[in-house]
Image (cartoon, rainbow, N blue to C red; front, side, top):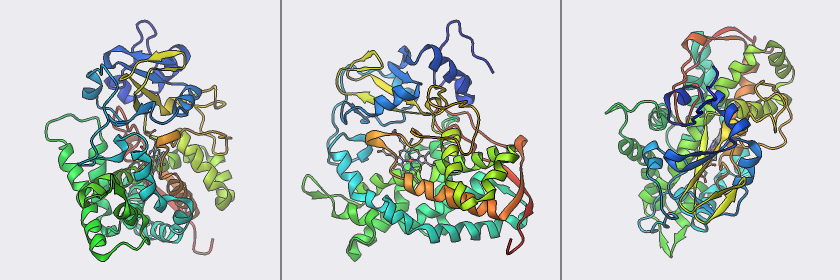
Amino acid sequence: MSVALDDFVYDPFAPEVMSNPLPFYEVLRDRFPVYYAEKYDTFFLSRFQDAWDFLSLADNMFVTNEGSVFTQAAVLRHNTEAPQDKPTTPFGSHLNYGSPVYELVRQAHGRQLRPGNVRKLEPFIRSLVRRRLDQLIPAGRFDLVHEFAGIISASTICHLFHIPVEDAGEVLDTINVLTRTDNDEPGFKDVQEHQVKLIEFIRPRVATRRADGPDGSWPLVDGMLEFRLDGRELTDVEIAANLTCVLVGGTETLPKVVGHGLWELNRRPDQLAEVRSDLAANSAAAAEEMNRFCGPAQWFGRTAREPVTIAGQSVRPGQRVAYLTQSANRDPREFENPNRFQWNRSIPRTLAFGRGQHFCVGIHLARLEERIILEEFLGRVTGYEIDEDAAVRHPSSFQWGYSHLPVTITSTALPGD
Ligand code: HEM
């Protein structure tokens, strides 16, 4: 698909962009690296270096009071001044507060996701993946994204939240409906209802832990119970609402990355053979290329709090700036031959997990899960075919990734292979 250059318009909510934004990114990078969308009073950064520099700015020059994923209705409303700080009672999601509140809450629960604690999850995740493959492989055909990787990421997150892993399917379905942006039909999704549902997966566990007495052994929740904001404890609902970002972030992206990545590998038998030749040594590198090439999130935005210059462009307080993650990931100024999937390419710098203040808190868990999934799937499944005609990639202004990839298993390793 090629994009008309005369009167070029980039609108992340336009149907043609939602169904395939990649050709638009090429034009943006080459001709309009800092694209101003007047309709939304928002600047879009498409080059890797500009996004990198933008995310390196001091905390609080830009804020996420309006969120980092904007709806079209939100950006159609133009700000005339910098967004106001929100009151902390009642306390909403810390993602919408500036420094230092944001960092204090992130530190309060983030210990659970630091490398040392994440490493301890390896035996649990490996046995989860093996059991899931035991269940799925005999059927011969299943959905790589939803039934396999999706259940793994949702079950891992359930485990972190002490939610029974039997509920993983319901957690996954709730999140998938909430993050879809392609269907505005009345009744398709009631955002509030789904958000309440997510909070209710967590709130009862927080209440029980509070009653039992936190002892620090469950950092995700204990850290939040011990945290004091302006000298007060957070309520169970406030804690649960703040932790839904981990529930969502930890569930939604990874399956789309791994499912799509396994498809890309299978399309390139020589690369697949190279990865297989030493799975323990090669899986982490292959996963990193999947994070670059297959990431579904298209952009994240911020709102300016001060006058600032971004890539030579003056930005007023209240105006928004968004970095186009998948455009940066395919910028030829950063990556040689960027539209080629190359499992062992050199990736000295990555924006696949963001950068700076809002850098992905789940990066270590994501990399661990990806590595284990690749090792176990490719170690066990020696032949597979993706049903390309049945692949589903909903048009989306935000999460443009494969949500269903049916796979047929054509051969498996014999025990002891
Ligand atoms: C392959 C998997 C993943 C990818 C590609 C990914 C990517 C990202 C990116 C690009 C951001 C930055 C957003 C921004 O700049 O505003 C982000 C933020 C975040 N991620 Fe991830 N992520 C992944 C997995 C996870 C996992 C496993 C978790 C949790 C266990 C997680 C939790 C979060 C949270 C809570 C944020 C918000 C941080 C903030 O705004 O302060 N992510 N992720």
